[in-house]
Length: 176
Image (cartoon, rainbow, N blue to C red):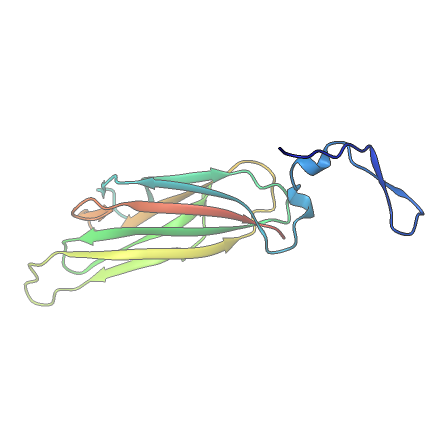
């Protein structure tokens, strides 16, 4: 049988004051967690293979997640895993992480660049596993969406590869 203690206040050790409880012990508030603590985790995973046929601009690949930070001082640790497939010779491509419309990676190559140069003739395909990790400071308590976008200079690029794999984005709110 579980025991219960019912009190309205707790007196401080030196007797100079009291601590009002008002149901605050039912859960630990994120504001009271020490800096560096993980406050919440959000994950999205999918097996969607996305072909990018538009060249020269960042295109959504269908992998995104949203998180609502509890404090403006919180950091968001983003991790992404997936794969990229190219079958064009002399192809430059890459994937990156966006916060809303802001590219958090390199302007042209993102966090996960690939470059294909088969030399004379080529003929082979390339699928590579890729991952990225980034610690963001969004300075907001509003819902914030992070997404993966890809860029290619040729139209034979696929996010999540030639054969479908599982791509994952994980967002962790870290107390600031």
